[in-house]
Length: 157
Image (cartoon, rainbow, N blue to C red):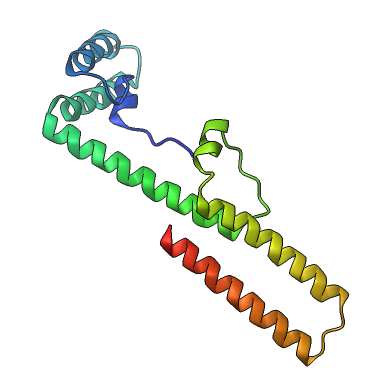
């Protein structure tokens, strides 16, 4: 999953950094990028404003809590959209870190893999046999049952 850029990234601190570390990082970066110290750099003012706004949010406990909640909500939305895309485009491989892959070894992912394997085998079987009305009803029935079960597993997870 691609990381979102946050105020923590602007100040180059971790998300669980104590206020003292945030203050020290702000002081160091503001001295480094202050427009008076860098008159020849065009982006010094913009960088200083970004650092100042990040410190303003992270130094206030209420604003920091709201920012952390925003980060969590945004990451959850991204994770959900990536899951939907993974279901929509199963043939496209996604590169994941080993730890992230282990975290995703949940019931839903395992059922998704089994459903794909079953659907592929069913499609091959349908292609190989001549379909008469009896076969068509049989395959349609089992496909409908499997789809209903799969949707039930997704909604339960």
